[in-house]
Length: 289
Image (cartoon, rainbow, N blue to C red):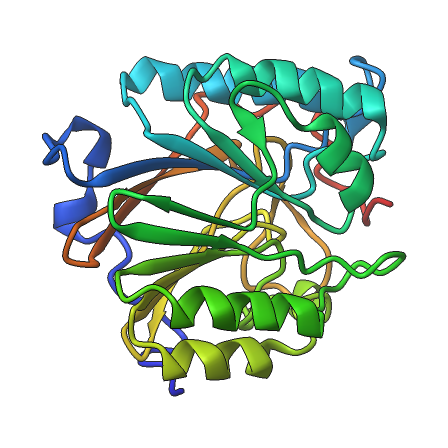
């Protein structure tokens, strides 16, 4: 697969996608809210790089609610609880239930997948691997390697993906935590998906795949790879500065992504941000655990 534009994100800020939350969309389109890298803790007062992640999450979701957008479902794409505590997941499950629609979760490198799946469950909250909505198939992959920051797709995950693609002719959106292509920041690209070629080969062989969606990078990324939309999304807490080689905290507000998956396979999407920087942000920090 060849990147159509490796340096400048393609189609980013297209006029037709501006103010997506204000556009009248056909009822047959699938509306998704993506939130990622919430980094909650067992202790509601805990902070990441000076930011109370629970408060930042709530403030970010308040911005989302202000749009009036009604999603069909929510995708939560990893690093959901920083200390992987049952208490953190239980709190998050309660918050997720408030969306009033299905919330599908996948793990990130700070999550413990078994603990996450045990506690992120409820009337609307779950951790499925394959779900179908309005003609679209959503595949949620687990790219976590226990004890490592970077990601890897086990053979079982690649086979799950192959089976999901082979049995569905309609459009497909694949979600995972770790980025499968470089985003232009050396330090975080060293912690991406280490067998991305295995994923991209399967994507190339199945033209019904219309998008790859991830978290992990704490910044906006939007490009196309042989017609497939590639999307990274800001965190609901701390952001990383784009296009730098070493760890750097960005002075950007937390954010979330809206996606409108159209019946013909087109993906319309928009990133919106909270109104204010989170209180206490430690911009000069050299990193975190």
